[in-house]
Length: 171
Image (tube, rainbow, N blue to C red; front, side):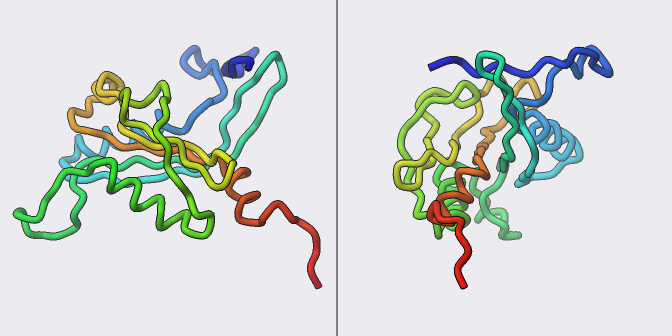
């Protein structure tokens, strides 16, 4: 298939703002950097927002839900209970959040994820998104020196799965 490309602005407000954002992940990483710089031990955040792409000049706007989790997996105040976040922690959160969609996870690749540490998130035959460990070089670019786990969901696909594809009125 054709590759998705970013949407370039004809008259950007600044040189660094020349694209409409194709993903929410950089803004999550920036928030994580600020929090860890303030000595946070754990960052678990999400963002719901619009992302933009184009294929063969056809522009597309999507509502996405993305999240990031890094640091400790336990909220326990006892240091002996502290464990670093790992992929199964992220998967568990997504399974609970997506419970009504009965998600399944299959090994996948994504350019933002560390090779071998990414999964496609599916419901039936529909791809809802992906989740995995951020590439260490990308984490380092945001001054994050620990494993960072991220996910990204297509809200339209999720809504269609949860509605069963039937949007008709039911008296």
